[in-house]
Amino acid sequence: MFANNNGRGRGRYPTKEYRAWKVHAEKAMRKTGVQLIDGLTVVDIEIGRKDGRRRDIDNQIKGILDMLTHMGVIEDDYLVARVTAEWVPKTQVDGARVTVAAYEKGR
Image (cartoon, rainbow, N blue to C red; front, top):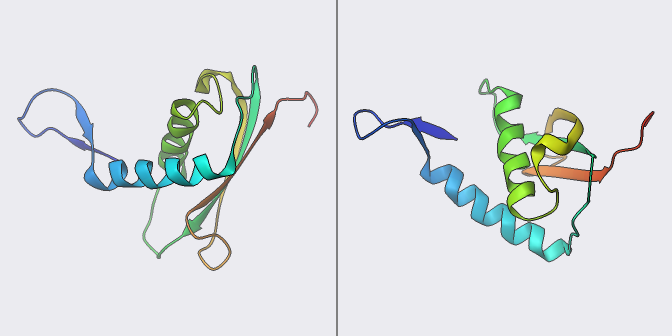
């Protein structure tokens, strides 16, 4: 997702692959006609595993939550009350399947 600047300044910057993913994901999301969910939300994520490489699932979650905020689906990711995420076979999900709902205590 992000790379170190390696002497070109301070901090980190988004990789070319991450920027391309954001463009693709935002186009796909616009087609769904999603609406803003006010207040606390619950986010369920299924991520299709492309290969056998080791990856941290929490790094995948950050990009998805950032995109949901940028697209206006959620007000801000600090209002996400719960996130569940799991790896699934790519044959089951190609990319990611994201479900966002209003938070209901006890759900």
